[in-house]
Amino acid sequence: MYLRRKLSVNALPASLLSPRVGYGVSSLVGLSLLLALPPQAPLYAADNGQDTPPTTATTDTAASPTAHPVLTADAVQEAFVRVADRLKPSVVTIIAEHKPKPRSTDSTTKPDSKSDKNSGSKKPGGKPDDRAQKPDTPADPNDPGDNGDDEGDSPFGFPPLGPRDPHERLTSLGTGMVVRSDGYILTNYHVVKGANFVRVLFNADSENPDRPAARVVGYDEESDLAILKVERTNLQAIEFADSDKVRIGEWAIAIGAPFDQAQTVTVGVVSAKGRHLEGKSAMSLQDYIQTDASINPGNSGGPLINLEGKVMGINTAILSPSRFNVGIGFSVPSNTIRTYLPTLLSGKSIARGFLGIQYVRIDENVAREFGVPGGMQIGALAQGANGSFIGPAKEAGLQEGDIITAVNGKAIESSEDFRRVVSSTAPGTKINLSVVRPATDPPAKMDVSITLGDLASQNPKPAKISTTPENINASRLGLEIENAEKLTPVEREWIGLDAGTHGAVITDVVPGSPADEAQVTRGSRIVRVRVSGEAWQTVANKAAFARIEKGLQPGAHVLMQLRQDKGVSVYKVIVVPTTSTAGTA
Image 1: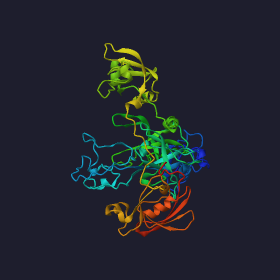
Image 2: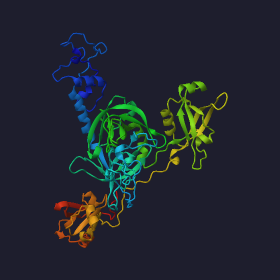
Image 3: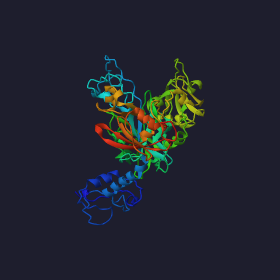
């Protein structure tokens, strides 16, 4: 059939074929047909009048009086390549370290109902746990049902017995993007939640990535956004798209570090807009862009990008029964980010209005019975700890069963619209609600003025994120050192030390310290040290290193020869800090 050979395509604009990054897609169907053509098949632009086959197949020539450039696979490929190259310097890898909980030494520990991870997690009532998940939340080391730590590998779900290595650290991996050239990074709050130390990796797929420590400037749990600050300048910041103009079916490109594979680029489309995810007790206030671009653990905090190289959203969650990508991912829209960004950069909390009700949208039949066009019916009023009703709605006299039909004179179009209007209005603001009370006969109509409360006052405040770990036993370089002879067999096993090793051994490295910046690793034996080009000094034991360190001057360069696992010799240079505080981010 000639349909396979003649193709009239509402193609990409001519700018796609130019060297500049300025792209758009107007016909995904046309692209699919094009890519399906055999390599030898010639292509025909609409109305080109060349080698026209018989008109037995229907074309869109009549509907497209203006000739368009023919879309080629090379042009689309070039678009993806240009976007990936342009965004690479702006996308970073985030590493957050967490202190593990002590292991239980009780040999009678029993697995709970979710211990058999092969059977699938269950919600109460036996419903499969197929829900929205934030895949980069660090695994609970004492939860045998978690897949993020080695304790979940037991075929019976029992956590290992015995004490935990006191220096062991759990890490969660995520992605971030530069939002200001002077060192401000945007990521997801859940990536750094509860972290004791945060590090940012620039060019993480290179052999020697830049890896500065970061401090958390501001964060918001509801929108799952966090801002980090690193001491870097002249960074390349991303550019935001207008997410209100994003269309379903648009190309969507995700960049991140899934499973520690930095700078991974995946491609899909915008699958839907205005999605809301199920929270612990209710639907989230935040709406999301849905995409089928592959998002996996490590992608959280990374950008979802259009073909113009602009960020449409920040990849945040997936819907999956397995915690891994099945083609349903969610991103916080860019316009939400732009709204909250100034507040987060200033370190302040996001203020959201609070009405104090639970509500459901009434269907057409119920609306008809009550003689209203539609609206939100109050299912319950907010309750305090003692069970009494609380909140602005209660104070304004609203009751269970009341139907809210409009806010400030504007009809409520959807539950999402109502949720957005209330939550985006600042606490202390007066709003006017149009209310119908079906409890009276006939139903009474009234206008109610309400002063919104503060949603933050109703929720427990997230724990403060500390990015300045302390280790009182560490040296000013950030090293904790012990003589190998004093280590127990268990301690040797913890740090991977051979049984016959003697001398000064590094048992811990403080995150963010000068030694950590030099990528010194625990378990290494210090062989010798040279300070600022002077003579080499042999380090026979812990005391010998302490004497050398005591005489170090600020700014000195300490060249260390270390003996690592299996006797491998390496050299590291540590720069002595100008302050005595190790680990300050």
